[in-house]
Length: 459
Image (spheres, rainbow, N blue to C red):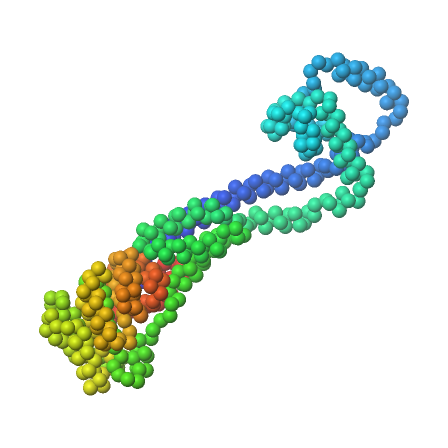
């Protein structure tokens, strides 16, 4: 759509891409850890954890004569162990080989902390040499025997029942690997990229907060397929921005034609230089092309040359202009234009008012007087799209002062950021009616939220 959203589109694309890449990276790290755990679990399953216990405690019995032959050697070994002054040292990697499963050891540590030095658990984790005296070995052996008695001897069927369901395990693992979850902390970090892109393009703070909350609701702690992260963010962003414009719209031509008591009165407001007078001329041209007759009211009796400017537009379009001298009462001009339209059966009156800032109390009061006298059917705020947040704040102020019904964004054709178009409707809760898209009278385009979405690259 013209140049509108050129910068915002590029910034959004970059921010969404960075978020997606970051989530992908996190997912791959998590996947690697999961796969490693799976391999370890599978390895442990293949080796047969309980089978190893059984083998240690009820292994195949050797013939008695062989046992008798080994007895003297065993006795000598026991005697040697008793004479040792230092306790036996076993490395962590040896623990499993000598039926010292870390889970059993940790359980013993919890139940009998007095048997262990304060550094023992850390040494066990770091695979450092672990000092184990006879009391420790005795307790571990006892615990192991209890564990075996409970799981192997007493309830052999239970082992089979508790054996992990490989199909269920790997199905869950597959689901975990191909999906990811974004934590709230991670989301806050990731959203900064998008927030920065929106701020740089003059998107209002209220809108940024709305988009942030919408994304958080859809993304945080929700399982998302890692290949669908980019698509999910784009779809959520699209829906969020579409909601910014769901405040109703006005079919102006139909509204004017349907009004029984003519004329249909429209008053235009905005600050100086916003394109208000030009927008009135464009709308008058559009009405004439749709067989709707209209009269212009030059109620801007304050700005120099304003009446002449509107007269030139009226002459080119071929419509009548009702005017008074400079300094005259603007409300009186509007009253005469409406009176003339009633007498001549004119369909619509378009009232041009003086540009004013919200800080000018006298001009604001004058604007309120015009509204009391003219009783407009429609009050339109005209703002420059290129002024971004300033345009949004102006619309907000005029809405609070007189209660606007709709918005025309002028100079949309040269707005490369588009922050006002995205923000003004949501902030004021009023619809954007038209976009000014050039200098010709025909350059007034009816607003379409779908074009905004498409211009942002989200359609």
